[in-house]
Length: 448
Ligand code: MN
Image 1 (cartoon, rainbow, N blue to C red):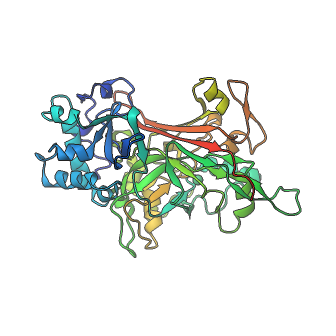
Image 2: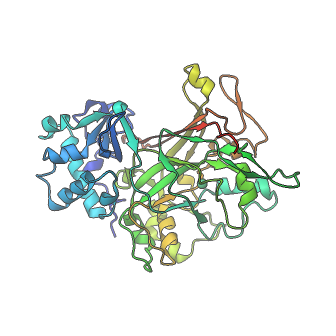
């Protein structure tokens, strides 16, 4: 079966250039080979939020482009997809279509935005500079599930609690997950108050109530579901990627002290549901086709059960996607200092990958719907600078991290901004960027 998520076509040609000049700059995250979708309006305006595509430093307004007739010369499928993208204030209608429609729209966008397009004149008027835009969530997210797919993260965190037996016996067999909270997911730029909650110090007799003292971030890849499956019908791993619209970044903010007290026996609850921040752009799986790599399982480890295994998974199931976390404290911001890197890891090191998560999520008959959202779990790599949370970077809150300006951090302080970035890179190919997922911690509300 030839999956659109794995098939190269003219839209991936590294020689393509756009008439939007900024898209052609070396290292631009949004070249004409990317074409990620988001929802935006002019910042501070009362315009309706609408769908757009990032191209260079600009956003192509899909509603305006549709109204200007940019897609009228394309086939039915492309016009239907453009129409779905242009309607409403979310991408859910586009996500509800299928891979053939998504591919047709990508091809149409590639053709109208590349150098030499006959549509350049009318589309110039449909561009909005990204610097002038503000974003809303790209989709109305129905259900949100968070996984735990990095064995390096699971082992490092497990070691803090169980030094002799860090990995629980199910880890290498079952993609571990829990049902998260969709209502508090926000888009980059999100600011939220430090959560209040119940915590219990190990040496305390009884729990206490107050502001979280161990506030952390989690570097994750977000997975937006497209299409979906009927209740009672599982998605086979071979077709799992046809149910994925695209990927984003996700910061799964975590109150570690609240989590430690509440998580047994049903898993995280209020320690995660106060805020989660995603990037404004969704990079389609088709855009990532040239950046795939083999998914492997060490010979000494259990091989996955058949419903979680396939030849194409082994061949190209993983994503070579570099992930970065940076911090900018209030003092750094006041001094005009740029954010400082905390870690660099790669999604290819994940123990479970996207198609396995979709196959596993639906194997019991659970239905996924367009706009549903999956978190990959914290993406930590094998190396010391590759930990995707402060909990790991500080050895469980024991070793402070020294920042360039002389400050130290163990967990997050009020005023801290965490910035996450992602990029797919290959020699000879354009860089595919995700934009940023940035979020800022505000002081807790005063105690009631
Ligand atoms: Mn998480």
